[in-house]
Image (tube, rainbow, N blue to C red; front, side, top):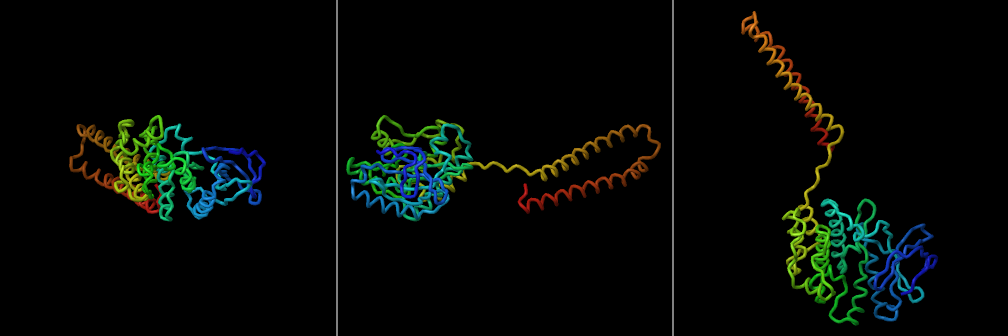
Length: 357
């Protein structure tokens, strides 16, 4: 594979630095001077250029994925061919991939948000008739604010035919995340991507993939034949509801999985408890006033009772006179307290109505 040096020009794009490399492609950060825009360019192995059928498939798939417009999918701006090099120009996401982030533990809300966003991207693509075929942490880019963006749509499809010519019976993908039907080179649909995303969820929850071995063939055998090791055996704090989501997403038979990525996302959201939103400063102050009033009322009641106990032995008035003299004061105090509490309750209702908590 040819290494492109900084300053190399591909069409209207200038190479700045190499940022990644795989088996059949390298990725560069580049600049589009006309728009003052930073982009990512995936340059495919020059050996692929010698296959006319691959070039035709590249153009067909590039045209298809360039039409995908979704906030959780890396956009394809352009594609072309320069000096026997085929390349795709894509949006640049500077935050790195989910694979980079997985070295640090994540809370359940972050896991749910990231997996849910990827599910949104897949649901949109599947409705366009496009299957990703290689959903894995390295292809999930994380932008600002933990915004997940799925990359490399179409790349597996472009390379799949060529790989099968050299290694019959093997579908392109990453064995640790491949669905059983993909590993068997059967026909696949969007449910294969759901399986792969289920494996990603498993890894985010437990810190490891469920199936691993020394060779790709051994991993694929496990994907097809071995039951899923329960994630709760590795992380006991995982709830049964969340574990059931993982189990269904990674069912061996496609018909036993969630049938759409949207179903997967909704089930995941229901299984992950949501953190309560913190109260606003205004509500906190009102709650504090109510607490003080309640505390003060209790103290006043205790004080009144004590005073009455002290006065009873030396009281010169009759019980009827003492009671009649204290009634107006008690009624006034209760009325004032009821008014303040009622006003505070009205304010709280108004704040809730406007969505302030």
